[in-house]
Image (cartoon, rainbow, N blue to C red; front, side, top):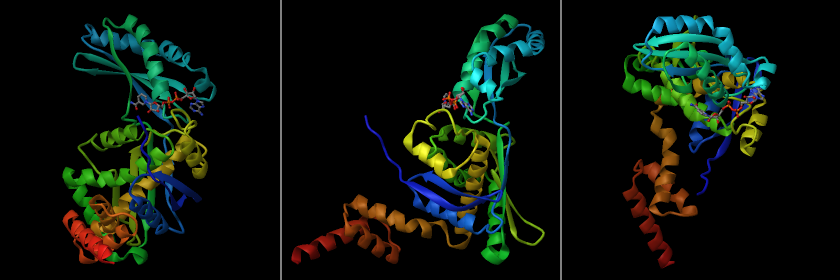
Length: 365
Ligand code: NAD
């Protein structure tokens, strides 16, 4: 019935493996973009180092209530090449590009047999591609298994498609107290899932924004990131420690299933422009930049909390929203929010009082 729009911004100062990037971000919170840019600036002149795995995704095919489960497993593994051939017959283009189905794995979950189709999706996110292949191989696998296929769908836990980034924030630039504070904050997240959820939310703030700007599926990224974080008990996606110079080293590792082709990446005009601004040559390069954004945003949030409390940075914007919600328009929005920030009283009732007051003054004039 309509569309909803998000502001499109560009984060700056991202130097990744020696290359400078402008990073488009679509989200409603400008402080996230400013924070990412500032955190990236503080890594200069070295910037970030990053790497990413080959774009390997997993398709799952479920068979429930299988009778001779170990016999079925053996037959499937013996027929690997045939299964791969059927999968690859679905998409000659991906095969021509050097990708396609690579392997078949079999898992037994109680009485269920789960087949993993391992697919190199090249520069795509890969869901349509993997789903098509999984559906296509299921009837053949059924001949090898005494049972009916259940689900045939991609797994968003893209654990074979990890991206990693590292950066160092010098003690001389951020201060010894911040180095200690950020490490303490990380230790807190390691020990406590309540804190860790917010820690990882800070990682995903910017990653989601880049995903939206480039037409990628941010729900898939969210699902993958949190599932990966929970693989061995819910853990932070980043880690921080003092390097041998006493500076703060930050690292991130998470699955990033994002594409530079497929979905709406090449058809949505904003996604097209965003990919042009980013100037990435492959999905793997995009994943590296996104990992750096995640690390930058997480560092920025921790630093803000350690140094001044998160609210200071958020206050101005929050005050504007409160003023607007109370009915302020035009120049009154700025006036009201400025007063509320100075008074440190950012509430709807205060905005209402101020609005009343300004309206009375205006009437008298
Ligand atoms: P897609 O099918 O639109 O594009 C992939 C196709 O592009 C490939 O099959 C290939 O034929 C072609 N292609 C051309 N050049 C290529 C290159 N260099 N590398 C790779 N492929 C190339 O898209 P997709 O990436 O398979 O699927 C992404 C979409 O699927 C997203 O919009 C997502 O929202 C949606 N989706 C997600 C889920 C999920 O995450 N669980 C489930 C269903 C659908």
